[in-house]
Image (cartoon, rainbow, N blue to C red):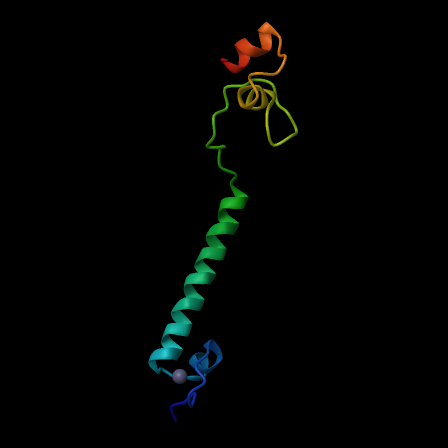
Length: 88
Ligand SMILES: [Zn+2]
């Protein structure tokens, strides 16, 4: 006999056999989220190259590189070499 969720659509009721519109949409939402999770996992497994500019050969641990800080604060007392690196 066909299962009826009786107004409580859910992925569980879908798997029990209810095929009302809301259970079907719950199922498709579930499938989409599952796919998105799987994609996220796949992206993590194969780290993509950083999309940002990587023209600075010096690697800093902080979120901002020194060049970024110099560019954001060009009025500070940077050395000529630092200014040249930052292009300011
Ligand atoms: Zn249903």
